[in-house]
Length: 575
Image (cartoon, rainbow, N blue to C red; front, side, top):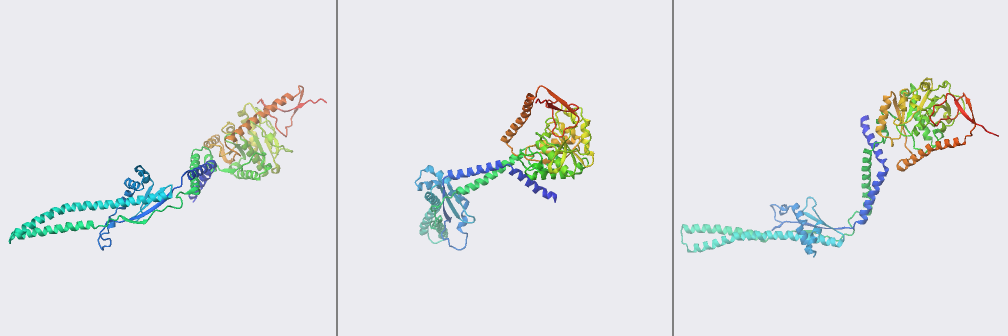
């Protein structure tokens, strides 16, 4: 039963993918409408005049009983070809007082048809003037009838001439024999001559009868049953019909273009393509939004928070995640903006379910998650141990409590720039940090850079049991998803599922706008750092504190390793 349902589902999925190419479909319809309108407006009105005749064969008595009907000898196919011949067109041109060279146009505008099981020929002539169309249709029909009658009469004359050639010698022989009989006396010779005379008389009678029958034949070629008259309206489909036909042809052309585009489109256009490439289910599809806060609970659209709760619920009841409660959130390519949103909101959803969640920002190349979240007052969860310091400067022992609104709070380990990213991610301190998920009721969510951009996610995959892939099916290639699955499986982890999203806008203008925004965002920190350096006084004092900060994480912009203690620069103020 499931196999019987696969094909309709596949057809529906393919149809949904086709109608996503709305631009091609609309372009096809517009082209069809324009073509139909152009043909309707630019083309001249044409009129079709029709005449009909029923053919008959030459006969002496058409009502004579018995025998074979003479009409059975008519080959209607041959008669139709004769009616459309150039000879008939020449005869009609002569009747219409047209030059002989116009015979070809008369022939091309004429259409002769034969209704089934009849001896009727229908002459339909198409012309731009209705009266002229009727006149030419009647002229062509009359030319055919005249030609047919002439052919019949010519055949009769030739046959009669041949019979007379046979009759004249016989008559002459009889006259000669009659003279000889008058001179003969009684006897056997007279009897023999009389027998020959009787034979000649019979032959003469036979030939004379055949000549008489041929001369008495009715050579009427047929009867008119319909005379062509000028039509009242043009025969064309008209503007509405042409527009409708153009729209239908445009839809067909648009679907064909969309199908060709779909065949050669390397992106994963649907959930089915994502499932087949990753060999993992799609846990959720995020609604399309235009910017907004990072936390879904602060977003105006409640559907976003509901979708994240649904994804978290499915993960919580997935035995592969429930056994270890460690999750790596990655994107195949790109900046990972949506992956950051998924990691943050899944942490909030797990916290809402009663778990003690630790969100680890393992993006050590472009960190900045802590600056986009608001810190919460209070202490860390009880399972959070004393901070462990890494040789590479991360993790630096800083855990920031994040306020998730009504969902509660979770802890964030912010990322920071380090010189050796691979050493920091594989350090013992990082391993102890990921092991916090072994505590009862705890979960660790790790956000890493794109899999195919850097190897950071693969360095984490062997210590994090499940991977969640965040992708836009309209932007990521199927080959990239398949490569992500192979790399994660080769690193010793498992793809638990995928979360799909759709970019607010696509196309050349959207890509250009996003590129400009990224350039501005990359230039802004450098400008702020330069302004801050210019405003710092020459005399500063530094205070060292051993307590970890609770708000945002200070990051070093030069990539130097972090010191073993957290320092806060204080500015000397002179009153």
